[in-house]
Length: 461
Image (cartoon, rainbow, N blue to C red; front, side, top):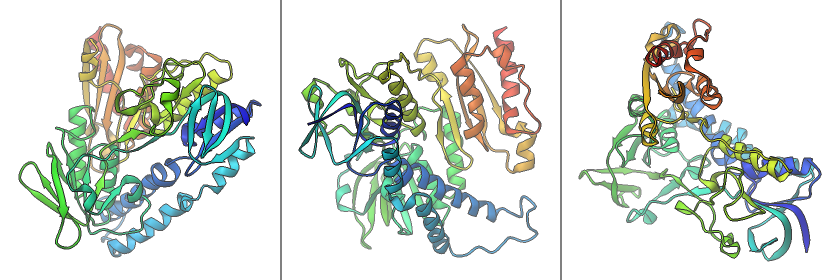
């Protein structure tokens, strides 16, 4: 039986990061992957979704070119279906046609042993891949997550896509029903609507974007509706059945029904732990099957078992997985790195995007924090006037006792980039009095910070 210093189960963002960086320091590493090296992000998630969104946004900009003075007459655009085909070809090229050969070669160049197959824990210090045993000193669980399928009667009997399928299939549907108003559902809804698809988005809770600031979430709903999406909030699907034309008919609890070519399942994700053999080590998954870890990335109750990425359900983003991987890697190499999750940014890449970091006011209050909030509208910036419709807002949440930001949420042009100012402020606990003295270049969208920060500073004085 071959034994390694480190065995990594799963080669997504977290697993690949750990394997490469530990191997670079001379440790023997085996990386176990049953599908694609690199995980979902490069092939059926982040990269293809952002590629398709960019194509849809470019098409929307072309439709409004005269509004921005870029043309005297509206430019002619070709058929939506033809344009969708062009976007799909660009998407597939950027996602390397879902071929992981280059990524596989890269990990081998780092000295990692890549083992193709399904890994399973068989005991302390031992595992197997499709029946072949291997040993380890340390084990890293980085198996990611899979789509959560809601318990809707009849769902298995109608045409459906998971988000992975929606971002890899070449098909152009005439209509879609999207189940779920989180990041994935909102992005897919705007993406397909941008190419003329009739899209209905159904979200059973009272707002989109989960626990984000309610005003910012309401702005996002308005943005999607302006993009042509039929947004249904506070409505649940009670059942689905085959439509006469072969598509799907979704019955809603408000008494209405929606028919579409397909239903897109975007109702969240669940950690991929089934069949891993966690019980052999006495590891009991937490809520929704997540592997529970301490702030060092070590699995609770284990000395030589670690976990990072979506399987922990702590920060379900690629950048969150990479952050956890850095912490685990440092500790595998003898360090004492500690994860700090207070300032992990969240983004929904619509146009304009929703971006947030830290706590909403409601969540801060639930933690016993006395909060002070301020809101600024994007229309207050000169850049919004020069660049187009002044849509959006910024909401800042401060801890009154400590005089620092604990949260920020925004909808606005470029918010996915300028949210980083709040990210650094929260992570470094920069005093609001100092933040209020920061000078921003004119005219930029980041100027939106200045007035609310000064108001917070006055309120804290």
